[in-house]
Length: 167
Image 1 (cartoon, rainbow, N blue to C red):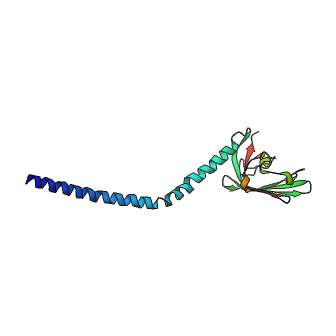
Image 2 (cartoon, one colour):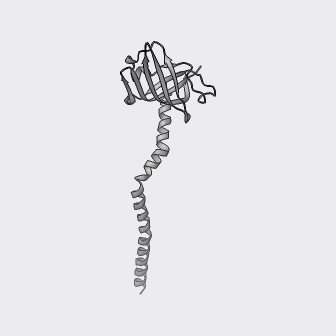
Image 3 (cartoon, rainbow, N blue to C red):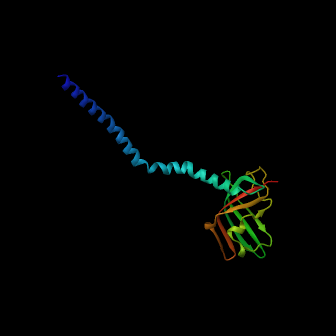
């Protein structure tokens, strides 16, 4: 009789354990099925901003005499006689930071993404970015090559990073 009782208790414990494991397994299956939605949310909230900060910090790395905050946006350069008009459309610290300047004796036809990097823009720092009044010297530090096009006297750079020149 004692043997039968022990066997009954063992079977009851096994059945109870199986009931406890099933919901946990169901939760694992539900978590795995919704896992594909989770990384996109996490990616957009954490990874993308972190990559943007990394890109901006890498743009400044090795650039002696340059500092942030960074201006990020697009550039259009249009040939006007022997000069060119440089137009920046972008943001600094989440605020609009657009400006335009004349580049004297500048030939747009020879411009590449590589030689646009290092271009000096004296006195073009937008207000409300580094200082309230603006007017600081800037330098183009990064031009994303796949988004760069030079055609018929017009340069379009879809993504550039511009930093402040440290006095």
